[in-house]
Length: 149
Length: 275
Figure 1 (cartoon, each protein chain N blue to C red):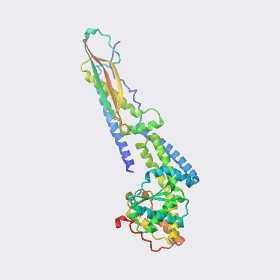
Figure 2: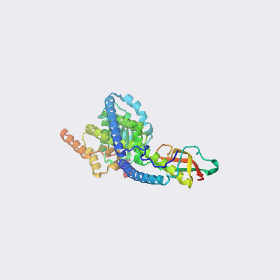
Figure 3: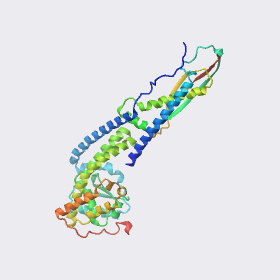
Figure 4: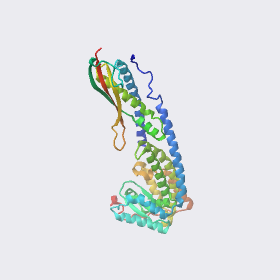
């Protein structure tokens, strides 16, 4: 009985805390993306610009680790049985990638554009026996160019 | 091409959804499915069990018994309980089993009927009883389970249960824990009927062996007064409604006209705490 109670408490905590954190994170992501609108991050390998006008080109990267909460974990576990879109993980991947891109842009400082942007994901913090709550890491990297106007 | 920076209006990567609703729908579906399979397989167990010969049961039991075959340090107690059980079987409860008693060092006031005639008695039980009649009643109760093949049904259902949850979620996931809890409730109500039948069997056996039924109700009275299911572990947690069982036993004693007399004391050395 205590196990069941503990389980339900964990789910409730996971749901409430997870939802609140997510809302706050999305607000922050939205605001910072707005602030960084002047700095495009594109997947093109180069920009059509005279070479002598490129003042600097350097590697920039940003990474973010987002943990799933207990509620999302259980929900995804249930999804594993019936199949279908694992909607509970979608926000995690989305948040991790956007946060990583934002951090990359922060690192780029006064660059004009970031080219050749790549985003990669990995799971970390999962034990060998596959127990425990896993985390998702997203890393975004690219080449920040400072161009002479 | 002119680049105009702007934020996307909607997020295509996140499906707008109600996670709580999804959770309840999935949980409900899963519980329904598992309960359905469990009931079906439970039916299958009930159909098959009467046809399992004791021979086959003995062969099957090897898988369950392998790990508990360790000897108890005090073999005098084991010898005593074993001979008491054989005495009961030889004189009054003719069952096609060769009973083997395992005395286990544990505080639980408990005895278990395992497949293949292996009866496990915990030392907590030996310390708790105050007469041979009480101990004999508990042993006869376990023999009652053998007479009705309840122990096989129990194991069968336990195997079904374990298989389902291990298959779906792996050995120790939290989802299977919750399921185990939900299913244990039906397991309990299932065994209540069996307990009553085993009680009746035990009462008959005790009356036959001693010519009276003293000590039978004593044991339950003692247990129900202490009112601590946790302390008595599985045996009395899964043997609920002790008071109902006592009154049922007393009804039978009255209607059948069983007599009460002085219970027979336990031989020395069985209860270590009192020596």
